[in-house]
Length: 198
Image (cartoon, rainbow, N blue to C red; front, side):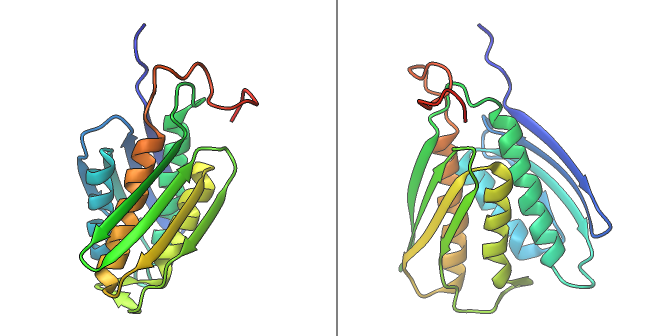
């Protein structure tokens, strides 16, 4: 039996952003990211690398206003890509979690490909900006991702002080949890739910 390719392509164009995204769940961690927001490029490159996803992402947004629309729409497009690539979720592990330490910081990420959208973000980032990214938008990114992937996504800062470490650990914990949840397990017959559908 031939294994299906778990690849999604999402093109999203609005009056505020123009996004082209390709996601391979069974990749090697290769990221080609160009959002126009340097710090977000850095975070998403780490996301791809540590989630072992191949992620090609280009966004042209109205950054002359601010980064809000770009960050939100990238989260939406990436969430849609995860939902599309996971398909009917047959054989999926479904649940994943990860603890990511970065020096003095520890973040826990948990994911359930339940088909129900719920995001819990219990993270305080001390600084208002990291490079060219308003840190208020980090929570909004993960909310957009979780909603459009139709997953439960929980991110929690257990402890930490350094804003860069906190933010980066969130992206990496989310990536590692998604990597675990989207794996295929040959022992799973059909959809991993007693309901028979996710």
